[in-house]
Image 1: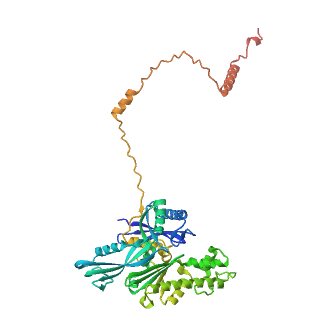
Image 2 (image 1 turned 60 degrees about the vertical axis):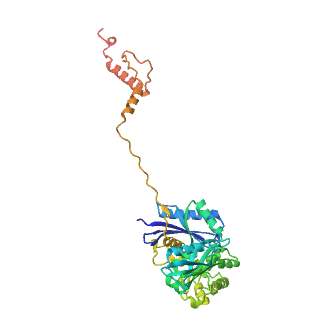
Image 3 (image 1 turned 90 degrees about the vertical axis):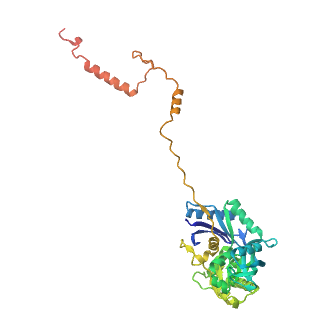
Length: 457
């Protein structure tokens, strides 16, 4: 069987990314292409503000991907969603079975659906993730296959405000006329792709340091235990630098070239001497310290300390590129820090794609592959050639055509003696040559011994 083509779109605050990949019969994901369009003030904290601009950017990405996958056309996509309104809250579901039996996938699905239907106020449930399972009052990290009767399941209900999803649906489904195969919570998908099962069992933290938000997820005993989104990101650092009377684009350039999360002067040959980086890094260091302090407080609020999270912090997002930010994060949280990268089982056909830089959109592809990917592209049907008609004419049609032909008029014999009365126009050249011919003929036929000149008379 041919592999399924999967398309993912991830809408962030500073850019929109689209990726195309294939999923084979074994569920192996191969990333084929990745395209990106930059944004400025079109999306704020995960909310689409300018529908027209976002529509235009996604349309460009779709066309770029289709050009690279010609002749296939994109008919549907998977959408990565996230932002400030996304959070998780714990819920419990208890059930007593009629008799002791094996805990199966069907029982787990029923419990998850019951948790999904629990009221959450004016918010919308986007995912239900298992947290802890007790069977006959015994904690079971892997409950499938355990025999028992009394079941207590603790779930994390991931919710968001309904407006962000509604606007995304309006752009993709209504304006672009694309099908939506599913919504994927970006923060959870990233955790499934960059964190190993061993790290989840030991205990770890995923930090998604984005442009306007920072997501914090805590894992323990193999399951997600806590998930929150902070309204702070790397763009806050850039906006702080604009206080030095420079545009945001220039401030972003200063931050990338010489920004230092420690507040120290960055030494580099790319730094111009005319720029005062001591003043710039005083802003960078202060805001970086605030973001790290909030990350640390979220870990404590989840009820965990450094000793309970030995696998440390896995960080993703463009903000993690800020010089010495990870070093300062490790110092203040007392947890080891590493950069999140895609799992080795994911293949890349395009060598230009850098896995750590594209974790957000690739994780959406990976989530689709794990949950049974649906085909997102269609191949144009070849044109069917028309069948040639038989060369043998239809007898009845031919006879009818002969009968309908008018009788031809008899041809009268032309009289050769009758001259055409119409005057014939001679060409100028013909008259000239005719005169020469007559003159020559008369000259040759003229008798030189004419009687008038006979001397003997």
